[in-house]
Length: 185
Ligand SMILES: [Zn+2]
Image 1: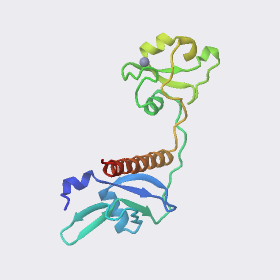
Image 2: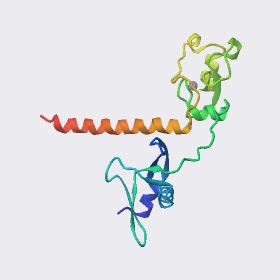
Image 3: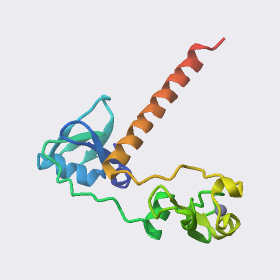
Image 4: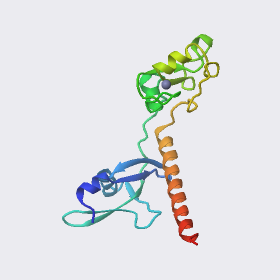
């Protein structure tokens, strides 16, 4: 039996009505969705989930639930290209050296050379890298980007990508642990 404090740390993956992973909610939110009939259990792995004890009953909260209603998907707009949003996309790290200090914005193709103020041309750069690069392209400055800049994805799309990546890593880990057992000589 899981204690109340442990339970708070657990989370449940929410799938849309058409079975797409869309978000992660805490146990309390999941219970509300289940009890009000806005979601139903969805378990592809039997036994996964959390047992929660209330004074009168024991609830089994599945690890995955599926909305039975159409989610009130708010209209999502591509965020503007500004310091706050670019730093968030780049996880507050210089895209040239990885530093997390003294961050500025850098136009990959300098504006003086026709570079635009767009998601695929603006990156986070520390002051050091920014001044080293100066008014040059990364190639001219002999510097390289850690990731190719692109517009941030819709939160649900980003969540789905992350979710399937996790599932894949999990499966791969299980398979490799199996092969270790089987390959014992
Ligand atoms: Zn840097």
